[in-house]
Length: 233
Image (cartoon, rainbow, N blue to C red; front, side):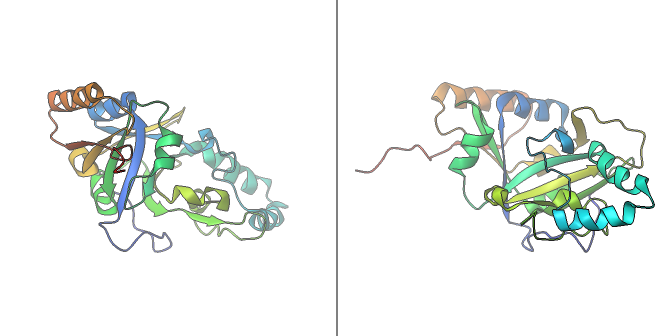
């Protein structure tokens, strides 16, 4: 179960739709292990992930003048935080298909904020949070550092199109060492509401996904994306 924190922003409506776009191998790994993979925060392509904006960094540097470990702790903290990213959108996103699936054999998980909250199984070894990402100007705007996970809930405005909500796992208080990331226990039937097949995929691929899901004992609704459906003219 994720931890509540009054400083974390989330859409008020638990039925807010969220998506995760991924390839078939990652999807099957999720079903087989019944664990959700989360990437270590400093392994993302965005090098600013988990870092501070310039105004905040200047303030932290002043605090760290007489305590160098203070700044070093923030830097090393990125190696102890893992993130699972989800896209908020009532509808499918053509851009998300393009960015997060490498070929026509990708798929998308449709879920909701409420389902994410209920899917995360209570974890005793480390802390977990669910929050919506804030997009700011890193040259001008301030990131609060009241809580050490705040840097992981802020990104540059150039990433606004992601409309991201995140599950965040912080293993600082445990002996867990993160390499590429972390797998957390989830209730698969809560997590997944519906599966969408890549809009450019062939029918055989949809049938393959249906067969694999059925053999693994799940009964999700599976549809092919209609973003590439026939035009009417």
